[in-house]
Length: 87
Image 1 (tube, rainbow, N blue to C red):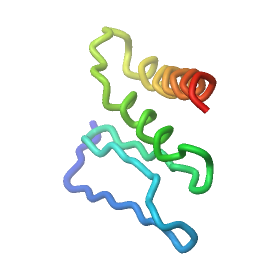
Image 2 (image 1 turned 180 degrees about the horizontal axis):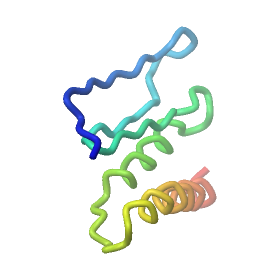
Image 3 (image 1 turned 135 degrees about the horizontal axis):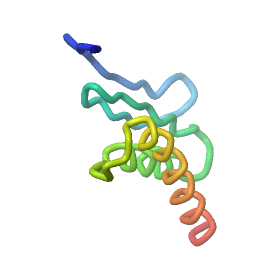
Image 4 (image 1 turned 30 degrees about the vertical axis):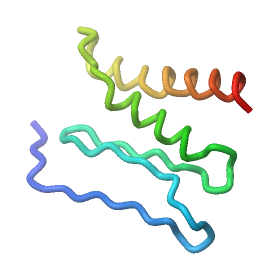
């Protein structure tokens, strides 16, 4: 069994942008980073939506591997749908 003794998280705006569009989820044992794709339209919205999907309640009863497989699929669909409906 994997045991997380300590962890830290941080993102950085970098050298090219004025705002940080990255988001992260750091609740052991699950860690995720969504890069906001600086310069892309609404990159901060997409990264926030992706991490929101990671953080969503996962009481589906499905195996963890299946849930991890579905998170990016569901997040991508939600982001795509929003992008199509709101330019």
